[in-house]
Image (spheres, rainbow, N blue to C red):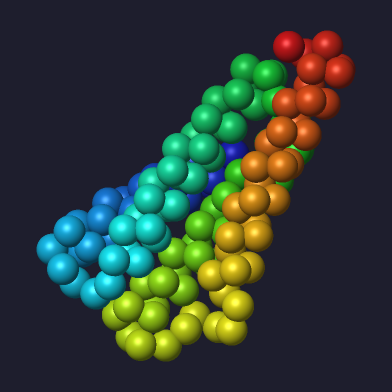
Length: 123
């Protein structure tokens, strides 16, 4: 599962660069820059969580849950912004807020994973 999420992180990074380029060249709204930032930032967070779990500095299952929340939240948030910008329609109602909530949840799960690893004596 970790390798799948690493592939997803790479795809998120590539999409983030693409959206940043589109925003820089005036394609669509300035919201594309926000979508690009969120994809790039959370792609890096997935890679960091995978590395920390591999070094046993995070418990594996909560780290996977955090990475999945980053991937799904980033896809929903950025996907909704991109759809509104390029197609003029939403991905689905409340897609961006749902994605944002998943991103927040991912960070909270990551914090809990670190705390649990510390309590278990893994750090």
